[in-house]
Image 1 (cartoon, one colour):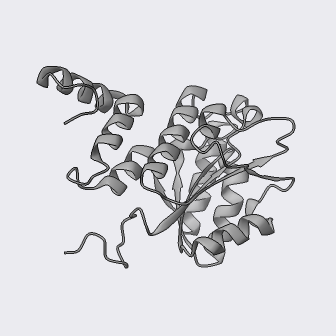
Image 2 (cartoon, rainbow, N blue to C red):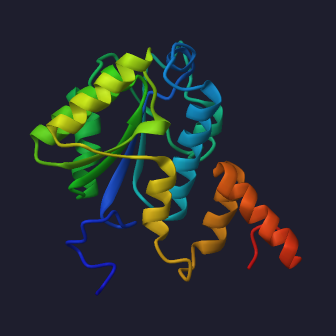
Image 3 (tube, one colour):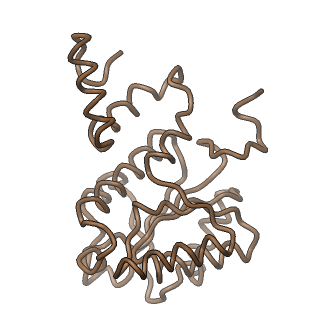
Amino acid sequence: MNPQKKDDTLLTPDNHALLMIDHQYLQLLAVRSHTNDAVVGNAVFLAKAARIFEVPTLFTTAFAERQALFQELQAVHPEQVPIDRTGLNSLDDARVVDWVRNTGKKKLVMAGLWTEVCLSMPVLSALAEDFEVYIVTDASGGGSNEGHERGVQRMVQAGARPLTTVAYVSELQRDWGRPTADDIAKLFAEYGGGFGQGLRWEWQLLGLKEGTR
């Protein structure tokens, strides 16, 4: 079975694009479904992994003159100027639509703040245009637990596929024999919670420097 076949039902590094929507400070401070640390850590983990796998990635913002993208997230792609909007639905913006079209991808992975507003709207719009859409729920957050849950529920009912950051990164790596393994292991050590600490312990027991095999 060829794990990289073009009709693969799993995500692969070359079959999708990533949209990270409005990971900004004002939105973050109003998130109540997750801790701020969790949202920032997962968003950066997601973006760094996508960069390692060379996944096309777009940052968007709203009213950037009043609130910047998380600095840790901007640092993943320091050369990229996020597309800044006034509208709530990023797929109402012709620049975002053009970027998506130019990637040539029919699978889109999205995360954003807030789940129930600026993530839900473009997800629903993309589904209506027959894209296959995946939502990274723990790199997103809502203004309340109910807001986040109803937002996810609405998107899933419309056909979106939910997954977590760890699931996304693991799905792209899939085989620890692939050349990205060392870089991804380092990311897990930094952002992967208990599993990351387990990796560090294993490296210690084996007498290896962190992130080497």
